[in-house]
Length: 110
Image 1 (cartoon, rainbow, N blue to C red):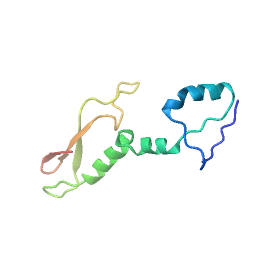
Image 2: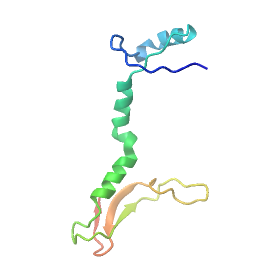
Image 3: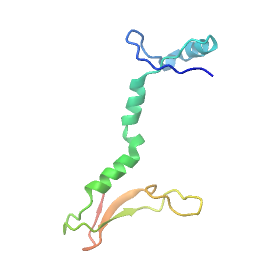
Image 4: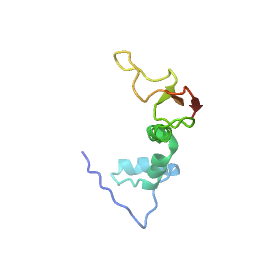
């Protein structure tokens, strides 16, 4: 088993996709691979990877009804969520499409 050493080299640029043949050669010769942290940070900050954070922001910003300003708001979701082993819907997996006020029955989309 090999050790993974993490460091930030200032003088060497990160490996790119065009250097994939060089990476195969280095792997055969036991030279270390240098990965770019900047690429991973960009992937983590993309909205596609943070769907649960976006859902939580939408739920938080729509806690009160815009018409009557009461807090009895229910989220409206599609029936496209994932099912668990017992056939029940996994919470938070369905698509959030809007909200409905429990008091005045006002509905609005996301």
